[in-house]
Length: 354
Image (tube, rainbow, N blue to C red; front, side, top):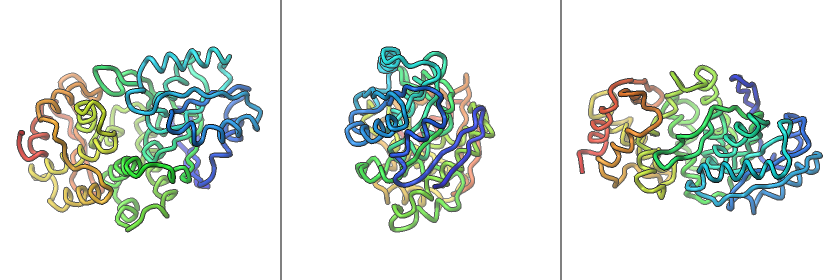
């Protein structure tokens, strides 16, 4: 088993091991003194892995129940958050009990916020079941639901008590969902280079999944520990995300998060090339990796719509926005400037206004 320690405001471990899902109950017992557990999951994941996790929790002595929402980004909303809280109350969970968030990014975000808010905070075990959630959304304490005005606008920072990554469950992911997770891996590779570049360039990455997950978590750990509340270096992790969130919203969330981030990275890379920050080799490598994993490198959404949605991004501070500029694969820097600079980035990255 690979283990990564996250020493933030709460210290916890990220456990990475193939076939470890059946040990969820043992891990929950280590991090919770309670007797009740509520598994939060969705309509895709619950039918496949729900009984395995419930059985494991019950074998460890928990009275365990499961709250299931419809799969999809549209379910990450305040209404489901409140329904989940009522479910915990109906099942009699107290502050000594535990929430187990089992699913992709929607569930890790919503389940994390539910645990943070219920009775002002109870124990949280994150069990990510998508590659995207394993390498990104389950680690670092960002929890949120979406509002009509924007993505992840209603949330808090709340670190889990532990994270359990079982790469075996990735075998049931649809190909497009696996690719969406790879988009975040490409992001980490662009930020830090090294081992991830070598893995991504292999003809088949699946034999290296545990190593890949561990390296991504190590990188995210470094940013989270140095800037837990996203006011400084942690903003590097937003590479591709401001434009990506605008693409998601502009498509009415028909474009998945990873695909949107991939397009956002490519747009930024092309813009950096055109203003002389990076070379053509850099943008070509990023586009090549995205194409290799069937990820988009651009969007058909109009520049005006992308710009307007970008201005609603939660990372904007007044009239300023921090842009993650790409110098080369493995070297980026933050450029905090007027938020209206986004229009130039979009124009250059898309090859001109459409």
